[in-house]
Length: 145
Image (cartoon, rainbow, N blue to C red; front, side, top):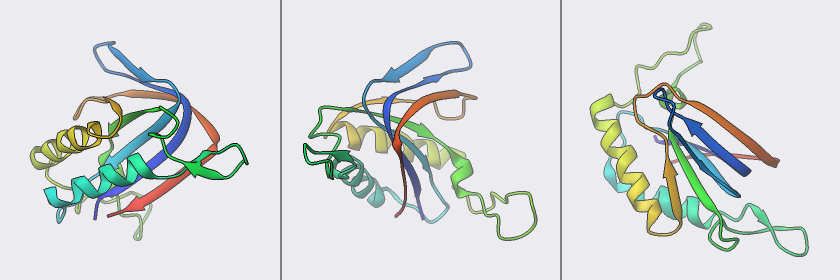
């Protein structure tokens, strides 16, 4: 089951191990982790949900607008630790995480799918990254697909 953590942000950026920085302004920071049973059929579902999730406030103060509605951007960061199982002991088990070779293709596919709806910036699969964000709210939503 793919696990996606979204955060509504005023801005967010990722710094790659080579020093390159990639960032967005107002929008959504998406962390995604894939598990062994996940297939490509889940990617359009995740992309549509990310683009259409109503987590931005309208003029009445209700979370009624999507990132598309507000002209925002999306930063997608691969995060295999979301597949961690903490039910036993104090060290997460990652035995159910998707094989990295397959997970990279899934990650790039999600970036491509989400780009159909909204401007997307991405982290780098397999890289040690530093992520900075200013969470707006805070608003954090965990989604499982």
